[in-house]
Image (cartoon, rainbow, N blue to C red):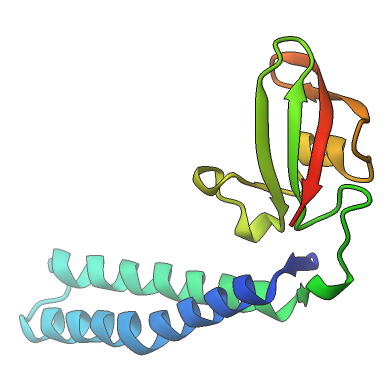
Length: 156
């Protein structure tokens, strides 16, 4: 499994999710299996089959999350700066073609959330911005073609 970079907050959220799945969801599914088993013949018991399938999906999710945190590297936010674009920076940029401004925070893939304007460091936009400074004009290949963005501001 690949190394995943996370903030301390992102790591804490994943650990809380694992704890919730293990302490709340796992017992709920076990109860559902027991109830379905008590209803008799398992060969034609759709409730039992559904509960066993849900259990398998839950265990797979728990295993994936545990792998993710086991291979996580916590980013030291005190070592970050705003000299050039790096992970955890908020970047304000302007589309050179139409003057539209946008702002994104570049985060680890596991913490990406477009609604919160957090883009994964592996995305084409983030890759195109990383390592550049304020005033730089970067060309980024997006699905609709090649776009030019001017970096206006770098912050936390």
